[in-house]
Length: 303
Image (cartoon, rainbow, N blue to C red):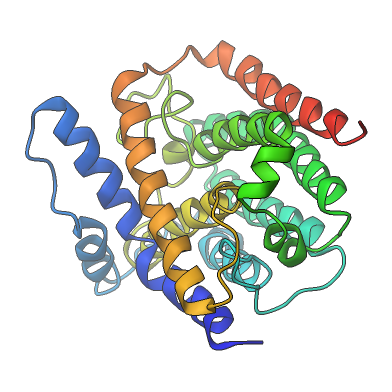
C-alpha cells in the first residue's frame, strides 16, 4: 500500500463537498447568473454541525441512525474504491460486490429513516427511491461484471489499473457503452437532472430530498456530506474508465484522478443545463436503458 492509496479516502472526505459547488457554478454560468459560492457546501456543513438537534416523539433510533449508517457505508466504500489508476487501500477478490452492497445498505437505512418518521410524504419519497433502485442496482452490477470480465479480475483495483488509452483503442465499443450506462447511473443515483432536481421543492417530483425533510442540524449535515461522498464514489467508477493509463507515479495518478472528478462535475453541470427533467413515469425507462447499455457492454466482452 502506497501513500497515494491512503490519501484517496482523505481527499474524498475533504474534496467531495467541492463537487456540488462546481456543478452549481457551471449551471449558473450557463444561466447567465453569478451563482452560489464555490465553497457553499462547506459553509452549509459548518453551520449544520454547530446546530442542536430536535427530534419528533414519533421517531425512534432508526431515524437517528439513518444518516450515520449511510455515511459509514460510504466511508467503507471509499476503502475498496480506487481512484483512476491509484490502488484502493483495501483490495480483495469480490470487493466490487461489496461496494454495491455497501451502497445498497446505505440506501436501505436512508429509506428506513424516512419511513420511521410516520410521514406519508416521506413514505412517498421512500417508495420512489426503492422503485428506482430496483432498476439501478442491477444495471450497476452488470456494468461491474462487464469490467470484471474485460479485466479477468474480481477486484476493483486490478480492473481499473488495467485500463488505459490502449484499452480504448482495442475495446472502444464496450467501454463507450459502459461509460454511457455508468454516467446515467451517476446522474440517477445522485438524484440529478434528468431524474431528479436536488434544488426542487415541488412535492410531486421530489425523490431524495423528500426523504430527508425531517432531518436537521448534525443529522442533515451527515446527509449533505454523504450526498457529496456518493457523488465522488459513483464518479470515481466513471472517471476510472478514462485515459491515460498508469504513469508509475502514484501521486501523479492521484492528481489526474482528482482532475477527472472536476471534469465530471463540470460535465454534470452542462448536462443539467441543457436537459430537462423527464417525467417521473419515464425514469424507469431511462434506468432500463442504462441497464441495456451495460448489458451490451458485457456481451461484447465475450467476443
